[in-house]
Length: 142
Image (cartoon, rainbow, N blue to C red; front, side, top):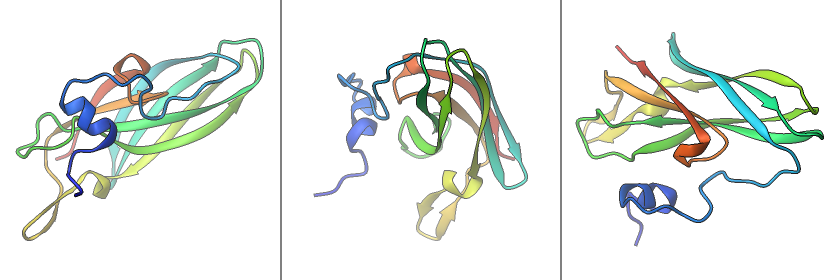
C-alpha cells in the first residue's frame, strides 16, 4: 500500500537519520557551498548558490533545491526536492548556480483542486537532503 510519507521524507518525519541521505553521491573531489539565496520572482522561486570545487581535480556535482513546509496549515513533508542542476567544475573553480522552480510545484491537492499556500516557506540548497549538506533560507509567497 502506498502512503503519503515514504523514502527520505518518511525517515525525516520520524526523526530517523539514514546511512546515506537522499541525493548523496561520492566524488573524487570536494565542493563548498556559499551565498544561498531564495527569491520569488513572478511565478517562480529562484534558488541560488555559489559552488566551489575545493578539491584537486575536476568533478561533477548535483546541486539540489528543497522546499520546506513547516508553516503549512496541513500535514506536509518536512521538505521536498523541487529542482536540481548538475554542474562540472575544474579544481579551484567556482560557479554561481540558479535553480528555477515554478510556484505550482509548491501546491498541494485538496477537495477542490490544487492550492498554493500564501506563507513563508523554508528554502534549502546543497548536495543532499541531509541538514548538514544544506544551506537554509526562506521565501514568502503572497
